[in-house]
Length: 196
Image (cartoon, rainbow, N blue to C red; front, side, top):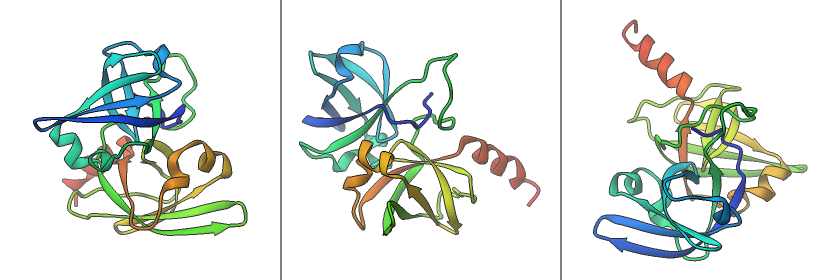
């Protein structure tokens, strides 16, 4: 379980294919504090630590994860947003994030607004996911509030702190991002479907 509040940015230092799996080595300030078998969210994707060195650690993504997320487009030197699993008893500053990406989205617009940025993302209607105004959404693992919700599209406002401390500053038009829709919204939608 995560909160969507990014702790650090990691740099991809090695990518190794192993049949349909991808072993990802990440250089990070978090590495010395990690242990094998811990969960870390990478651009919002929960992956298990399988090895730790001094300033790097390794996680493995399976085919299903690679198909559903943007991890298959990682390249050496690319930055990823990192968050360790939340501690029980700590403040929940973001929202409840599972680290299970629902689908990929595409950046369709970036607008600078006097010190902040409005990013718009489009996603497929085939999975039945929805957003609502002022609801929560996770983009590349970052907990955000939806400011403009339309069918298969939403916008988020990015403040300077978030822009500088996540990989939002690297997102360009037509880039693919990982989307995790609000778990409470998904349950409500499922429960009300039978009445529609």
